Structure formats: C-alpha cells, structure tokens
Image 1 (spheres, one colour):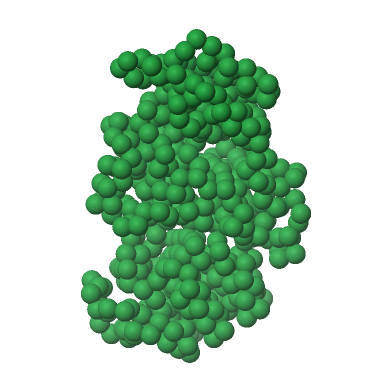
Image 2 (cartoon, rainbow, N blue to C red; image 1 turned 135 degrees about the vertical axis):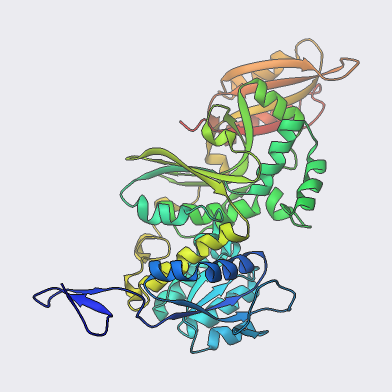
Length: 459
C-alpha cells in the first residue's frame, strides 16, 4: 500500500485500486428548515457530534443555513446564516441537502418540490406529507436525479425504514403490526393500569406534551395510519395508498373493556396492521386485543414497537421511543449520512420505497376493504337481564357461522336490570360480523350499541 503525497487516498502496489480515507473530500452543506422540537434536536446533535459524524460519513457536514420564523429558539446559530424565507434555502446554490422539519403538508410540499427543482437532496420527518403525496414527490425526485430520505417519518428513532428496505431485503414479509403512536399507547396504558377514564388521561397527555391541543390525529388513528401507509408500501412494494386505509380511534375504549380483556388474558393496544394476501393487502389501524404474553402487549407508556413476520427470519420486534427531539434527530442524521456517502453518485440510491417503479402498481397490491378482512372479535353487549337474551344472541351468531371461543355475563347495574354479555369469537369475515351486530342491536332487549374490538394473536 502506497500513501499519496496529498494524504487524501492510498493505492495498492499495482495502482489498480483506490482507497479513500480521511475527511479530505468537499464538505456537504445542509440547510435546516424549522427549529421546532425536532429541528433543535437535529441542530444540536449535528453540532455536538460533528467530528464523529464526519468520520462515519467520510466528509464534513456543515450547517450552512437555518430557516426559522422567529428567534425564540435555543440553538447557538453563531456563524450560521439564519433566514426567514425557507425557500431561500432551497434556492441557495451552496446547499446540498435541504432538511424539511416544518410539518404540515401544503408549504412543506412546495418547499420540497422547490428543492428538487433546484437539484437539492431532501431529508424529511414529515409522515403526513410522505403518506399523502409521496408518490408524486418520489417521481419528481427521480426525474431530477436527487434523493428523498424519510427514516424519521415513522417511529422516531426506530430504524424501521432501513430495516425493511435493506436488512430484510432477502425476506418475504408476511405481516407487520405496530404500536406506532406513543400518545395512544400512553393513554391506553394509564387507563389499564390505573382504571382512569379516557378523557382524564387525554388531558394529562396534553399537559405532558404527549398530545397536541387538538389531539385528533393521535387518538383517531390518523397519525398511525400515515406511518402504516409508508411501512406497507416498503414491505410489499405497493404504492402509497393512505386514502384507502381503514382507521378507527381509541376514544370509545373504556376501563370496563380493558378490564374484561385482561380477564380473558388480553391487553388492548392501538395497532397498525398490514398483511399481504393473494387478492390484496390489509391496511388498518384500530384498537386491538393482543394476548398478554406477546412481547408487543407489554410495550407501555409512550413507547413504540413494531412486530415484523417474515418467511426467513420469523418474527422480530423493533421497539423504542417513537418521538422526541434527539430520538427523531438520530434518524434524520442517519438519512443525511446515507446521502453524503453516495452524494456524488445518487443513481446508486435505492428507490425510496425499495422497489423499481414498475413493480409498484400490481393488481395484487390493492388495499382490501375492511369488510373483506378476517379477524377474531371481542364483543360487549349490554342487554336487559331477561331469560332467553343470551340464547337469542348466540343464535344470531350461529346463524352467521360465527363460532364462540368464550362467553361470560356480568350484572353491571345496582338494580341488576342490565348485564354485560362479553363474547370472544373465532375468526370470521368482517362483513358477516357487521350483519350479526346489526341483527343483535335490533333485539328489543339490547340497551346500547354493541362494542366490537378486533383480536390479533400474532400467530
């Protein structure tokens, strides 16, 4: 091995192979758009671990510009150009990578398209933008020969995108199921452990910063559905199809249901589930009963966890913080380094979804309607405590071909006029369960709408 006089690289004795070493290459300059929670974490981590990151990336990474609307941030931007117009960053010829951390869809989409048009690579943590507009953005990036990286868009610091697109590239993925919203998991954990009502725990989650002032995206499953849409596209080579997913929130879950579930050996989690069939893929987010012995059922508080079932590896689970300043920044910087390593040959980058574009529109990758899904069910039926009511309920289920796995009845009123009939069923198609519930609710002795929660046993 002979060291060249400039110290930049080495060559072997026959001068055929070149080995680059050190950080002699031209620095890569980034512009950070947004210094909110994640933006500050990214800025601080890039600054604090600058030398370590440069050693791993093979060249220096310099924060050239920061785009912020206000000066009320805690980052030391001395020597860094600060602008109010984030589109200025996308136009600046000195910038190599634009980091979009402003959130929302409209302005963020315009910013990324503007960056692409000016030949910039993009890193984003914006799951809503990728889930709803990713197909269009990826096509634009490919036309311009630039990269869009988005590891931080799903599950914060958990490297699920890299795992699916790279580590499991040799596996056929059968199913993924995940707790991918920390707010919902915190709420259900508190309700279960302390028998607290939903509204009370939601208020606490907002006070702790786990939930927004408008918590709709978290508690109604929209945030989780954005993430699941992205995961499913990578797992199965499907186009992003957020508008076809089934979404159900947790606001109707009560401590009563959590208690009954635990009595049957289950925990209730808000899951995103995607599974491939010959006829299409499942894409659904809803409260789910899980066997208490399953590792994912023990993931409590604001943690995220994703179970991946494959043909070669079997089942494996990734877990950790799904949000937070530096946890999410960890994924953003991983994306930056990935781009830096191939910045001079972006054609070597994989398609953002891990498949060639012509593989993304196969008919078998269409999203199945929820009525076509098969599942086991937890049913809670509030009925007048009269003779024959239980028989009437079980007769309806029998007529629909729905087998009962377990059943119990418990009086719930002081005067014992009403009782909860709780049933665990075997697997059945959702369309048949819809018909059975409609018939049960039409019985004169039924006092309230039937509570239905799907069951996944992760087999």
